[in-house]
Amino acid sequence: MDINFFESLKLLFQIIAVIFVASYLFTRSRYFKEVITGKISIKTQIILTLFFGIVSIYGTLGNIQIHGALINVRDLGPLVGGLTCGPYVGIGAGLIGGFFRYTQGGPYMYSCFFASVMAGILGAVMYYANKKQFVSTPVAIIFTILVETLHSLIALITTTPPSQVVSIITVVIIPMIIINAIGMGIFSTMYHNLIAEWKTMDEKLALETEIAKKDAELHIAAKIQQSFLPDTLPVFPGFSIAAKSCPAKEVGGDFFDIIPFQVIKLSKESLGIMIADVSGKGVPAALFMALSRIVVRVVAGWFDEPAKTITYANTIIEDNSKTGIFVTLFYGIINQEKKSLRYVNAGHNPPIIYRQTTREFFELPLTGIAIGVLPDAQYDQNVTILQSGDIICMYTDGVTEAVNETNEMYGENRLKELIQKNEYLEPQKMVDKIINDVNVFAGNEPQFDDITLMIIKVE
Image 1 (cartoon, rainbow, N blue to C red):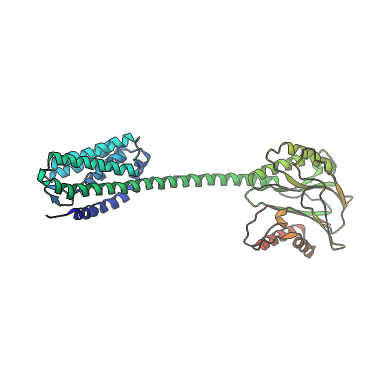
Image 2: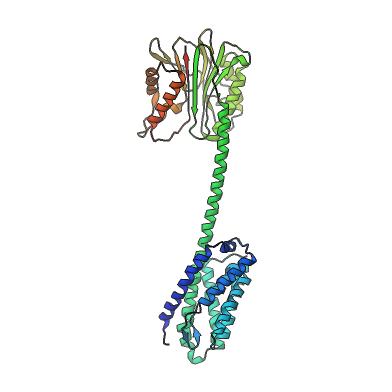
């Protein structure tokens, strides 16, 4: 049969296209994953030997001969088997493909049998030389060209008559070298992409596991932090109190506290109130929040003056603040009999007092800097006399600095208008109404800061 160089390439492309499809499907099997991990069981080695042996057989089925030389890609099976799986698979596939070629007869059957086994052996040698790892694609292509060239030289020297050398080289050898090199390049690319894909999947799984672990830890941390906040607020005759904290993340830096001094026998007629905002967000802020709350709560039992309490607490907190975190805090003591509020405002948003009798607002101004900034900071205290119907609103900046889609802030004016409009509501309903109004105002904008609110109504 007359055939030229381009017809040989076309035939070999048709053969190798089927091999690519079969190889792609096989590389997606669990057997080939053992190849990637380098832990190939005996059963898998047998299956791989059969697969690459069948590939070698199929590579011989072109049924076109030139002077007794079959146009084929038979060596690709044992060569890939040796490069990816080692000697057992490479040599086994070479024996299968070589024996099949031997049964086809012809002057080249001995050299082709030997060449197929040699391809598996050389692939296995490269496998060990590269520490049982598949070589890079350029190296695989060059290696294939060298092996096929060696195969061709053996066939030319031992079997080919001088008169047939040119036609064998032109129509058989060069197309076979080209197609085998292309086939190896495509398989190598497929192999390395598969490694990258599985590596990505493993990294994704590890990342998802780590995220799930952190989510669980944050959930536990959120429960622990929530336990720091009072579950129920104490009954304090003459006053109604409600409070709520909504962290922007799983955990936050805002907190509030109600300190019933009768527990530590400071004064049964006094009640400590506190609201604070730790700089930053997340776990660091939550840890600093826990430290600050515990310190202030303990120190509050030692002194009956808010200024002394906060001054002493500041020294402790600043000494333990190693990361530049600070806390703004409002701390006051309500006297039930005198209806007075003695307080320290350490850099916090000034609480608002709404006086129902005059329908006016006034604020409780700063009396010192934030806690944890300077070790020797001094704090003054103020006192204000409360009247029946007064509403005290203590809040963190997550309320007034909430923004909507147009980047407009909620602001103090909206807060004051809402308090005045709902002055007859019970404190708990007023707290819920304010937080809901802030959320409605923000719309689809994410909550960027913790929101904490306390409402105290003088009965």
